[in-house]
Length: 287
Image (cartoon, rainbow, N blue to C red; front, side, top):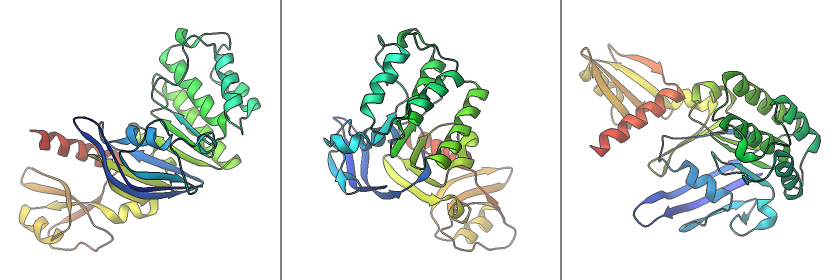
């Protein structure tokens, strides 16, 4: 399974949501698709799912453009943050409709997960809590067995135990039925250990695409006096920097380069912290 994104731009009347985004994803793999609010994540996932068209550029799945391609889209399951199901349908009717749409649908798994999440098949979608709707989305995503399965903030309203069940299911399904999972979430600390590759969008552009093994070689926090830090990082691109008690911290793209110098310390940067730094950068740029 291969997704090829070529110079994709998506513009609306008053703003550009994505700008010349280009990358390739190959699976099976679990992808962390990350970014702060407004970074362009959901727009891209809607494009990948064929729900909207690009302004320019193209998205190909195994060489075929996804927009207006029914045979390709039947192998892509997109569980969005909301609005996935008809409110007047029951859980049973919803799953039955999905069974007809997805050619690889696993009915046995669907019924098993209805029990796991303690849902009543006779309940209508409109009567469900947010957590129950999220559980229905999770069931649909896993039971679809779609070659590309996308979860965009899949566990709104679910407690810690239910989220843990989701993570366990994700690992189990990737072992039993490997596919390309794309997970977009703000609960990065919880999910980060699942990711095999990380994509970060920032201000509508692809900021970073790295495997987990590459991550700690490319994103580094350099600490020391302002003079020593500036000397150590040279012309490396700075993501974020701040001063506290006469000590400067600069988070930089090391790109595998060795960073050395006197009176400095180097620290790794977690995914969660990087997203916080990017959000602060956005707030500053808006002032």
